[in-house]
Image (cartoon, rainbow, N blue to C red):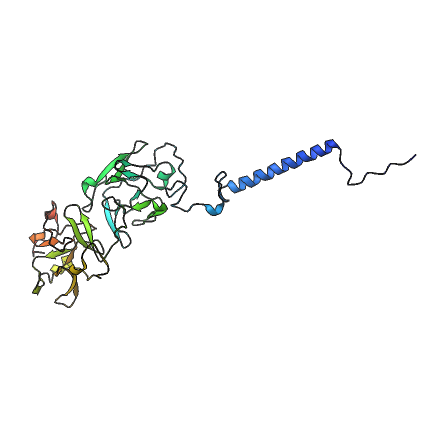
Length: 339
């Protein structure tokens, strides 16, 4: 009787064994796929599931998927976290932006291109309003450089009232941590520091001599620090005479000469330089020596206008600006001598 050959290690398995093996392989593959998906979708690795983009496509701050300069908007309908009251607004000057609006603590206020001013509408909510906290309207007051009627409010979708400047809703940026920070400027191409009239700051950066739209006096000349430029009736352009000397110069500082290639809004032929009796050089507008006033503390201040009937801001055409102000008499500068 013939003896059957022993089975080898490569013998075909039975039908039941084959089915069990396929089931085990399927479960193993599914577990591996889930592990890979979890790792790639975690906060520590690459991208979120369903985005369709890899880790090298993560949007930088200011270019988030919602265009708000932050995370994607999960607009939950909840009110945005209450921001600090703005208090007395101020204007700050920078070489890159010119004058821009800050709150009472010096924190920069911004506007959003996706909002509207006419009518005032805020389109930043949810996560956007976490990155860009809306500025409360209550208690905000305007400095001399901002027209009081430029300040208003808009009622947000959550019922809170947000400050507006000439209709544009105002925001702070969560990553600005110190007074004067402008880290939000230009983010996403849609966020800009607010200028005094609600437009985008930076469209007219600081110049050696520039034009400022002062609410009470109109378009007047300012220096590179945003300080109002004045002329003195006791000076004289021809023959040259300087009426402000000695202790007068403690209060009225001669403006430094300007580079004619660094002017903004003024005709170059109006700008010149004169030499004072002590040999120092001074800026002249329309041949008149011009000064800045130590009583002016921020861009747009005109505390020197009309002092003793002798000191006047200079208009963009180089002429003396004789418009009166309601607070000229409130200056604490001594009234004698007449400077």
